[in-house]
Length: 539
Image (cartoon, rainbow, N blue to C red; front, side, top):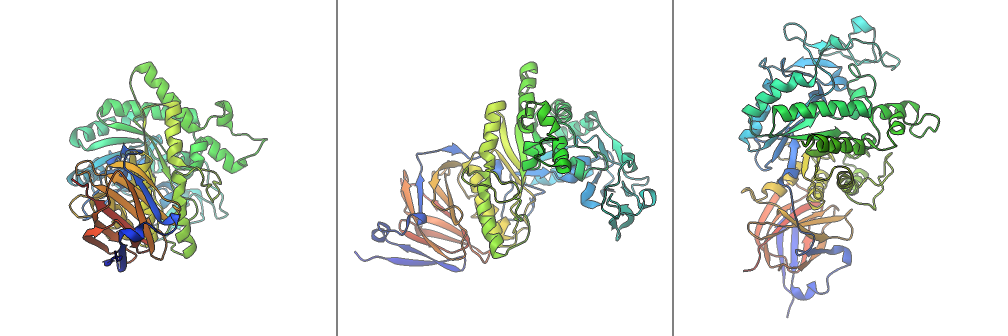
């Protein structure tokens, strides 16, 4: 029988499907995607496709969960509807335009509710919140007229607001936190949380502040000394109790720590290490030494577990962390070397064979590590990565890395994922997210039951497979990270190949949809690209 060749234009490049005879002598092993729908089956949480400040009113990507988070939320004053970004913007307290108490968050929750998204709200724990000057004017922590000349000032908008560092770069100490802030306790937020819970049933999650391991840097005008692990626990405990009392149906998430250093060391230890050396035998980490040399994640999970055993009430529902690659991926850099780094560094999320290439210099395997932390210290707690980004949003490498991350989240059984922030509508990264949630514009994308899927070289070609529980379709996400096209073969067990609906996001950022594509032979996918195949089950 003659071999048949049929070509289709996908994303500006030709996709070629060859017949069954040639499929039997397919190319090298690295071009084979092995899928077994009978193995490794588990549900994929729909909440892994979330984002912070999602563009819920934009077409395409359908966001399931929207997060109100970030550095400014650590000092959100709901009574004055004002916040303070700390070191991100000259320690300035800036009121929102709407003077209504809680107005900014009300608008946020309303927008999320209209789009059908669950809301995730950060509850401050720093002990201070932003306080505007009389007349709802700006206030700032490091006044040049009060504390002297400084390294930088907000010259354009507020010349008297400095960055809290003297001209020689040394930090100003002994400032007065009340210059731009007011003291706050968990009870400060109770009326607000009660109102939110009553007004917005879509508020599903309450977060225990934001990145406490960096408070002594980001918010050093109010917390110049890193908090100890015991201090962080007491703040977390008090805030969790308040949240459960004020909003019984909401789930509490924490500790919302920023990254690798925060996972290993308490804020006090992190500050100590930065000032005295991380491996200084003469100045060992004080918190770890005093707490049996356990990491803060272990300590906090054990404390929450003990609290539930003593009280009969769960105060932490989801164990949540943040993670950013540390090699410059979180940027707009699209140089050839960065494109390759962006492609391979997603392995830090799962791969025990991948040693992080940056200062981390360790095997992160973040999601399996999170599962182990929970299993060993507080079983039954869900896990989430509530802030992450691999950058490159306006480039094809941003699309392929984002698609890779979402596939990893589903395969590795993450419960919640929230990108920082929602990519610009229509950008390659945005369209990659839409491939999972709404590829056809009708709410269909990737399946909700993960199944076994294996590739040989995930740095170059990654793939994920899932069954769509309602239709029984097999969905396959193929991510070609290389610049050139690649010919692949699907090795299926438990499901026939047949004809599929194929959606291709090519390097030109055009999403091309085709119906009735025969995927039973060799398939040449353009590169770089994200390709979704939806293969019906035979009757």
